[in-house]
Image 1 (tube, helix red, strand yellow):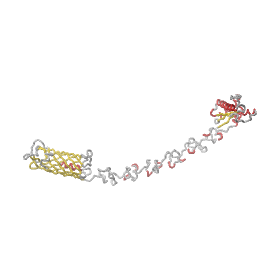
Image 2: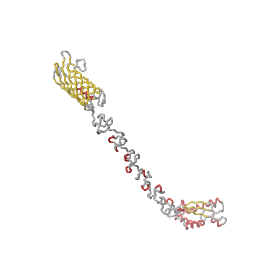
Image 3: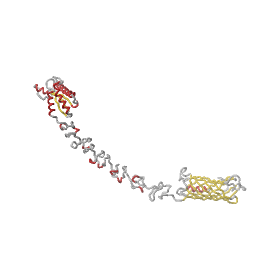
Image 4: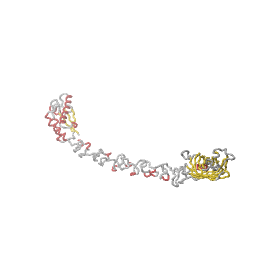
Length: 478
């Protein structure tokens, strides 16, 4: 019975209300040599009262002491009966099933099991007086009316080491008895609040909050901007930020908090206080006229790839060092014609000849001699051997002047068929080209054309005029 009371109080106890008392009433039911009255409520009624004091140990266990006092006996007939008074005291350990494993800790219905070690003292006229150790075990259940009071039923069965309290001396079986009881249990004690924030520890998700810090209903520090940094630690409590900067934001994620970032919405670098240098040339984008291409300070971030002091944007030859006079292009022979346009880049020339030297008088005389000096077999494109000398001089001119490109143009007089003359003039120009190629002049440096009778330079009505009109002309191109 005492155990029963203890358990009921225990069930009402929590980490907040760690102490409890119980008040119970019930019936002692004998089981021994005279018979068995356990759960037999038709037998004579032997009532008792009980008080208990208990302490919360954990969500699963309570420890308590309890005492019961009342009548004890059994009536089999007028001759086989006994009756007296019995006082019990016991230390009881109870296991609570509403511990979160079987039932929720806050369940209104709370079953339990208990066991312990006690002592029973017997007195009266029709009972053998004395005291016995007891070994109580039992079960019970409690129903919470509120957080401090509950109604309870308990069944407790106690074993003893004696067989003589029922006047049946050494009759065979040790005396045993059950206690069935009902009552009320009361829990008391203030809610445990280790950090003194006004939220009980059992509800406090942040039980170590510093003193004086404002907390939410669950006991955690207020975090107004919801950034995971509590207001009392947050230097920017109304703006969502990051822990690295004590709750202040770094909007562009460049590792520089917005308050120190001159470009808070664009990822930048510390060197420029959070502003970007996209091309990494050491000039921030806001001052860089070429922000996506690595450049130099002299040209406000724009490049000078060849290092000639002319920015690429104004340099016609940005990858080759040149001069301002040539718009950034080189002029190796210093003739005023950029190498890129100079057909003779290693020899000073004139612009009219694309950088090649002016055709000298000697060359002009050779080409003049060629007008009449190159002779062909009559009506044929076969060059006469007497022409080889002047042609060899042309070969020498071409070999000495690599910048020269040569036009070879054939002409005839007006004698004969016009169409045949045109074809003949073309063949004779081609024959001259072949001779020069055979002597080592690159074919790519020469072009040929035939004009027949269309471009006379003298009167075709005279023999002298026709002789002049039958000619091969050389024209230098660059």
